[in-house]
Image (tube, rainbow, N blue to C red):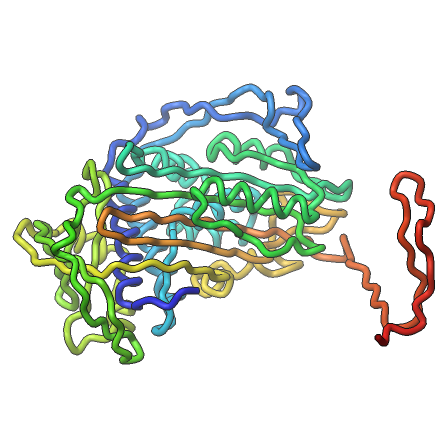
Length: 440
């Protein structure tokens, strides 16, 4: 991970949450309006298969699902989730960049397979106790309301990857629900090196190349990966001229003095909440804004983060004063990756991660064994320049099976062994030998 100013990264995360909050106020689909979605009906045409990856959505007829405009309860729950996740992941030293939206999308798809106390905990963390049905109706509507234009491009995508093994039994209703609400593509694959390459290529494509590798490996006990990815590429409403860009000194969290290129402008949205001051800077078209909040002198970033609440952040952003602001912003660029499991457990959904106790009975089984969340990973990228901002994010939820389903075998050639080089078509050896020693 590239080392960059932690204050800037906090401002950046606030910016993305600001865009998230701003998006909640944007026009959304009419309540209960049916939205066309693909289906996973078993009566549809046979799936397409390429390179060992079977696209289960190929040639299938669309289906509709009801959505509703995000209301005040959804906005409050989403803001609370965003702030709580940032508070759990910020360590006071490293840059942090989260996309609460893609994490929420990936976990909402996962929650469609949960039942009992596992579902109740997930509903509490993801939707502040609202029902999964309400979340399924509001979250896709919010995502669909986020605009994309030539100068402010925004793209979201979701997919589900299943291990191609006879023991894996994923319920069609689970896949159907996620296809209906989240337009999630469904792929079945052997979870080998080719699958890993295809999965990472999917993420790279849907993050416009900003997240080239989501996962480093597919573990032998991995049953399913649920993915959500986004890309954001926007120009400033008023780009910075070269003459307003000057070198300056940024003081890092450790006290180190760092040389940075600072961009100056006069903005018209001043932010303040008593503990921090900041500004909002619009992107082209006005649908998205960059926002930054700088803790007051004597207030540490850690203390300021601890004071944040979702409602407080929303009120601060909505209460921007229309007054001139001499705003100075450093250019910065970094990538970030993290495992969010411990944070999500601490936020109130530990059952989903407990093998043997998690209840994902509405999702399916593997070898008759119940499933649980093995990990939730996030990768992000940001590049803030005089022309605008590029940002990408992806989240992956890895589902595993409790019990000895795919017990990995181990072979360590640490004593004499037979080896050969064989013709793959006939299995006849071209070379055949015995290694009694490997010393040069």
